[in-house]
Amino acid sequence: MTLSMEAILNMLPRIRNEARSMQDIVLANLVAIGEVPAPYQHEEGRVRMMLERFSECGLQSCSTDATGNGLAILPGSEGAANILMFSNVDTLADEHAEPSLAFRKDEIVGPFIGDNSMALAAMASLPILLERLQIRLKANIIFMGAVRMLGHGNLYGLSGFLNNSGMPIRYGLSLEGVQLGRLNYACLGQLLCDITVRLSEDYNWVQFGATGAIIPMNDIINRINKIPLPRRPLTTIVFGLIRGGVSYRNIARETVLSFEVRSESADLLNQVAQQIEDITEDVAANSGVTVKFDIFARRAPGGLDISHPLVRQTRAIHTALGISSQMYPTTFALAALVEKKTPSIVLGLTTGTRRNDLPELEEAAAIEPIWTGLAQLVGVLLTIDGGLCDGA
Image 1 (tube, rainbow, N blue to C red):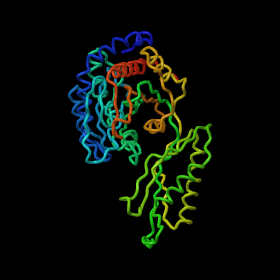
Image 2 (cartoon, rainbow, N blue to C red):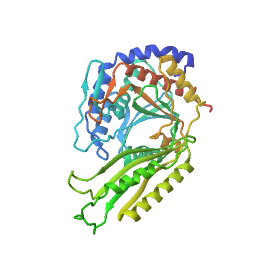
Image 3 (cartoon, rainbow, N blue to C red):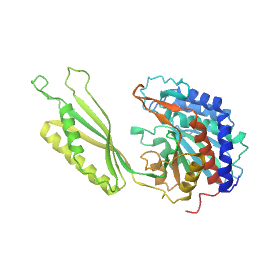
Image 4 (tube, one colour):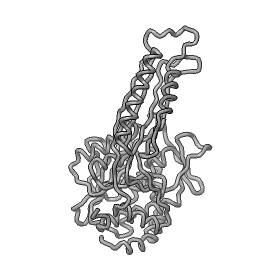
């Protein structure tokens, strides 16, 4: 289906209204998918649910690949090109956590709605929306619920598909539940790191004033915080998680710090990594503890330029829908597509908040903006399919 950009922009209000008429379908998909536990390395139940939804709306080749990803294809009228649309199925939940979603007047509340149950529900609903709109693209859409993407998963599902599927991808669309308006077209370079401080076997536990593993880790954190980081190229260190110890009264035998180093410069990433290595070796030598610095993932910076037609046309769609484009480098899945030189962007589908009245892992997502998010998605697909994003 080939349309001019003007025609696509004029269609957007009708697309949004049609999406709104599917509220029951979209929210049912959200509950069905979002209430299936999907902790890291145990995503099979959620993948099965995705495949059931894909099969119910008539997609072809609904199956898992060798990596465990859930895949389905919406064939195009010509099928000469493939558009990959994906989101992660795994969550940061405990293996035994049972997620539950609650509906309020104008929002949905629950764990991992924004990352990434809403995006999965949108993918499961999109084929029905396209059918109602009587839109058939020329290109195939490959829908994928990707496994083992977060944390130590290190984009395992997406990388496995790109490396082993043998299916050439013309464009990639990475979906996030929130925030509507996000338009990530480039990614920062990134190091994903763990530092582990462990006491030696001959540690004197009964010595008064014994500090255990926490104080040396505190020293490491303080010294990392003093590393000078430039504003240009943009470089930052994000401390994400610290864990250690078993109770108030017991000296911690082991403490682990999980963090990211992000930069627009690969050289700066290497420099900061060396400085952190020096800090850990110095603390180990002077504290009598064992310190292990593990960089378990390295991602190179890259992506599209802001002038790329895919970025420019998406911004036009945002403007037509009254969306304020939020353009900033991402640090997640885009990196795997950048490595393959596949033009790709990340899009958000609704607005969400993490409030103090909600538990740490829960968030609230607004219902009404979802229909604008789906209209945005259809508009982007039409511009890609019509060749309006080619030529850069």
